[in-house]
Length: 153
Image (cartoon, rainbow, N blue to C red):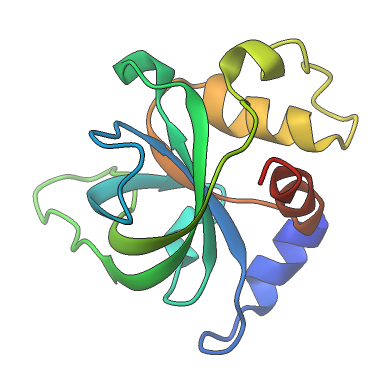
């Protein structure tokens, strides 16, 4: 089991901060706070909680430029499932407070060459989770990937 998988399995809630990333449409990249409503989640993203770190990517499919900010989650609420739909991706609504703006770019163009899904590189983890399926989403990320992303601030 990966380090992320172990952390997700062991997560107890309050006081157990983790790192996540979100790729979505961003209207104002320099905003001090963001609200993301009913976002799809994958790769443990549904476990996001208050006080977690989240790296914010402005979706290139929506005219964005990739990584724009590091933020802290101020609230997280799961979206109730629709009763009449058998299969559905878990969704969550979050509010975040920006704590840093990116100092150098990181987006799809820089990550797309990292395609060896088993190489363990942070770049590959991000390419796999964000760009293999181009949908906007919240994902859990490994400690190694969080440390890699921290270098962009």
